[in-house]
Amino acid sequence: MTAGERRSTFLRARRRGLVVAFAGLLAGAPALASPEGGATPRADGPCLAFPAGEDAAFLLEAGGGPPRARVLDVDGREAAPPAVETTPAGALRLVARGLLPGHYRLVMDTGAEADAARRATPFAVLPPGIPREPAAGTAIAADAALSWLVARPGAPLDGVREAIQLARRAGIRLLRDRIAWEEVEPRPGEYRWGRYDAVATACREAGIDVYQIFHASPSWSRADRDSKRMPDDLRAAYRFARAAAERFRGRVVAWEPWNEPDIPVFSTDPADQVAAFQKAAYLGFKAGDPGAAVLMVSLAHPPGPFVEGFLENETGPFLDAYNYHTYEGLDGLPHYIENGVQFGLLERDRAPGPGYAALAALAAALGEAKAPRRLEALPAGAAGWLFSRGDGREAAALWAREEAPVTLPAGLEARDMYGRSLGAGPGGALVLGSKVTYAVGRPDAFAAWRPGEAPRPGSIAPAPFSLAPVVLRFVFPADCAEKPKEAWRVPADGALAGQLQVYNFSGEPFRGNLRIEPEPGLAAEPAEAAVRVGPHGLETVEVRLRWEAAGPPVRRARAFALAEGGQGSRSSAALVRIVGP
Image 1 (cartoon, helix red, strand yellow):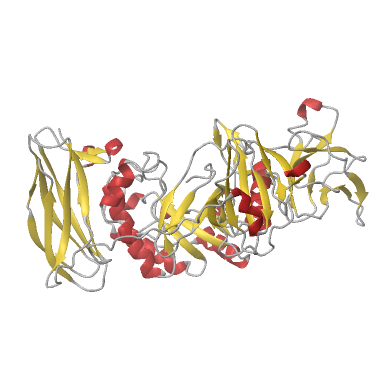
Image 2: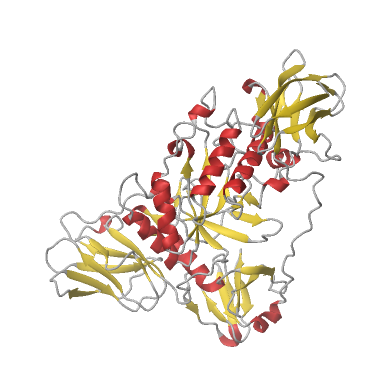
């Protein structure tokens, strides 16, 4: 996911069972300049997000007479004008007091009303209830890409620390970063960790966990220098993953091997190639840091040909999380829009946008946001989910596509999407709309809305193989790849020639036999072959898949390796989809 993506959801599978909601933290909004020749306001503090109960205070960097300033809320309404004060050092200071939680803009008036928005300074007032030390298990996180968007090679980390402060103030404990593989490893085995080291350390010192991703193959890893395809030799991925996990052990808690390879923007390889890459990277990460989580490569599309082909390659044991990015519209929620896409919660120069204030309100309302349960007895047209806050209370997120009246049960506090308290009418009457409403209180107060049961982890059938260090990959000519179908196309002569690579990511030699099992209408040559692979070695077998006249339009060929004398133990399968000429 790039910096422009607003949120992601992943399910930590099997033993983890955690749902994490991501919101894009940084953005590329147009700069919001200060008036020419006038005073430039800056926060009298570490950032432009002011905790509940504190004054929103600004220092003026340039001189001049007493400024005229206004404070506008997110709906454009004018709040009480800020007070003008003089600091002991003689500088001017603007102080806005008594503001409700939400998003605001400080407008310096110079008489040019049309330029007011351009000359505004965005800031946020945070709601009460955001823990100063967010729980390590909180389900609220942000996609920040600090190393790419904020850190600069060799430059001070002031901007990084400010972004981290913004994350902490909003109740965020986990940030998604980025590593550029070729920048870190410009030549095989030569590592330059640079800004990534510095950012990971700064996050760790601030109590922020880092979830890291790398993608794009280094130019040296492919003969055709195509960065959107997996390396020619998957041992390059294994070695980099192992080195990165070792380097960042204790500072990076989770890794993602590739971003959205199901779309050509990030990868032109079919799913089977990405599956083999996932396996090699997983084994490398676990070799470097067994305790780090390894996510599945992220998905841009809902389940379809890519994820089917990816999972058909028996990748399940090689990931700790199913990783899916959602792009549905969020009716009524505030967000920065550019060409129809929301690009983040912050505006340029790390000024909070309306979405940042809304995320902080979500953190304050939902707390750890655990054990989600659907509310089954809401009025027609209304919807909602109930979450465990982690402090003995629960919180509901409520909304409706069209206005829907609801009665707020006694003992619950209602808040709007910015964390502002909502006074219910007679008998607890509230009107829900497309903008989310939160209700917070003791668990028994929600009984009238009849919460359903929390989702239970599903059982997963044991794999027919162990998590073996032997990884197989079919390799065919690049011009035979059919990315839209996540398949390979047979040439006009009816025979697809290539190789079957056999990797051994262990310190012990592997001896065994290969088997290739084609579906009806597809023939494989050879069907079996003996193979010997040294420690951390690679061997290849020439293969040919021949298309026969009769058979389905899409046909599969599966290969696996049986260990010699292993009582039937085998590697995970390499499976390719084949389409006819």
